Image (cartoon, rainbow, N blue to C red; front, side):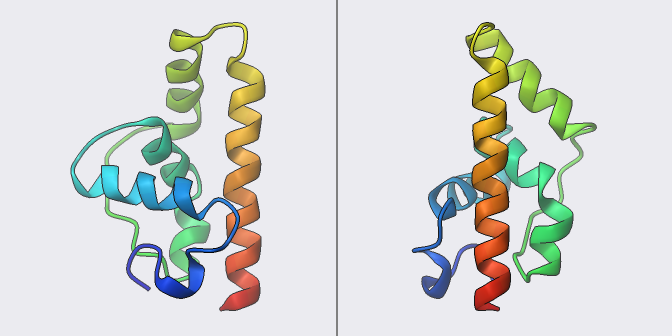
Length: 96
């Protein structure tokens, strides 16, 4: 599967994963891109073509990026993003 294919576009979190894959393919390190990098091992195992990126500790980088924009809401936003990632991974595993 290259990116998020038609079969997976309706899965929960697919919009976040698609945005992250698009950003990574352009070399952009964004919130969605970092979420994809956090889940890269499992996403690759599910057949998602995650572009290689040399971002050490994507979990910490994601939290730091969220905290820079909203220090008080970073923790809850981080957890919400990770829940969306896990929802996509679980749903994609059922479809695969």
